[in-house]
Length: 328
Ligand code: ATP
Image 1 (tube, rainbow, N blue to C red):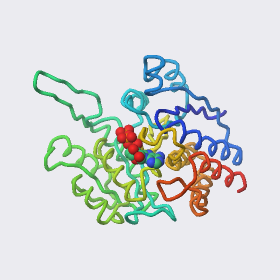
Image 2: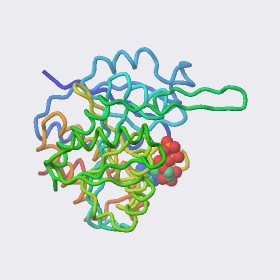
Image 3: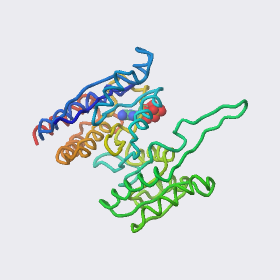
Image 4: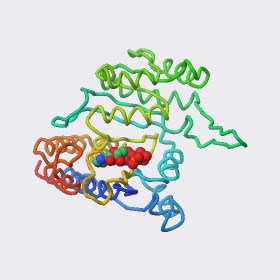
């Protein structure tokens, strides 16, 4: 039975980086005999302009039928596509590994995995405006915290067995206090510490080597992972996986970057490494490891985009990495 993959190219630099990554996906699938059934559908600003819906019913039907979604960044309609997919399929854990790549200039040495709660917090969409007052609800549940903490535990057990729980319970005593208490309870037996989100931002720049697994809420994770990606060498390198109990979505951490769209200079590595995470999720560590090795080889051989000091185009990087995999 093939794995059903739905590809959503997205907006801005999305189609460019997804095209480059798909070359790599096809090469890895061929080389390692992974049976994928790949379909493509539109969603995002492009779809909104064309069909009047950011997530057209046809795309939603394909997403429902898929085992896994491989997605580029979405522009202004991100909430209607990315958040919708996360909520609809309860992709409750957002996994964002942050690690230096050899040959990429970085601010500091860093090797950690963010486990960001992905379907709760202020992103539940409960916002109201009443006269001169605007209100957003921050929702944290025990069940939601326990299941994402269990994911953090699994990652910690595969790594250095250390988890840092990041919150702001000194101010948000009830909601963040609840998240902290439930998370700490669920993580018993591991080396666990806790940190306020502002201190965590500072530490990620000052001494990021202290982090192994970072468990945090949706909004703090959103912000901290952009920061951490920059510490490691740039947002163009940061992959992510949105994981649920039976479905997953893989996408780069970065956004649609309209400022560089259509120029062929977007770095596809974040999307290519997201593809590696996808192979890992379907149990094909061999293909995932080959992709990661090929990415490193490409950088070593100076086939890289301008954001990390190279002169290659988006598609040249994708093709080069695909060729390395074919030759492995
Ligand atoms: P969003 O609000 O959805 O996060 P954004 O366009 O404001 O999107 P990003 O796209 O995440 O923000 O990134 C900010 C900047 O980083 C971009 O404007 C672009 O210059 C640069 N950037 C982002 N992704 C890449 C990439 N893959 N390759 C090279 N540069 C990138």
